[in-house]
Image (tube, rainbow, N blue to C red):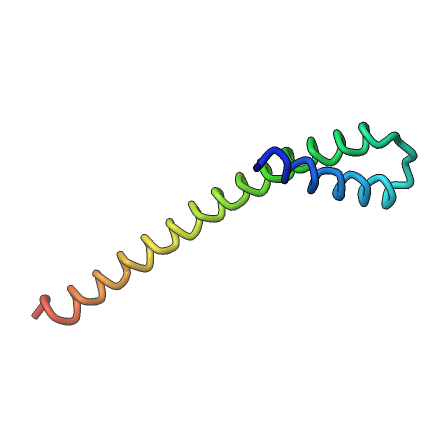
Length: 78
């Protein structure tokens, strides 16, 4: 089922992309453009989200460390 969905979405994306870029292609080429574009786009999006996740993880680690230092200074350091 995911292959069929990829072909349908790829056909729609390829059609839209070829019209926006004003390129005249056959139906199989349009579908291939859309499917390959979907694969490349999803890989780039996953990479961007992974990098963003790492950045948020680092920011969370820094905030957590700051909170622990604040607790230590406030309650445990006479």
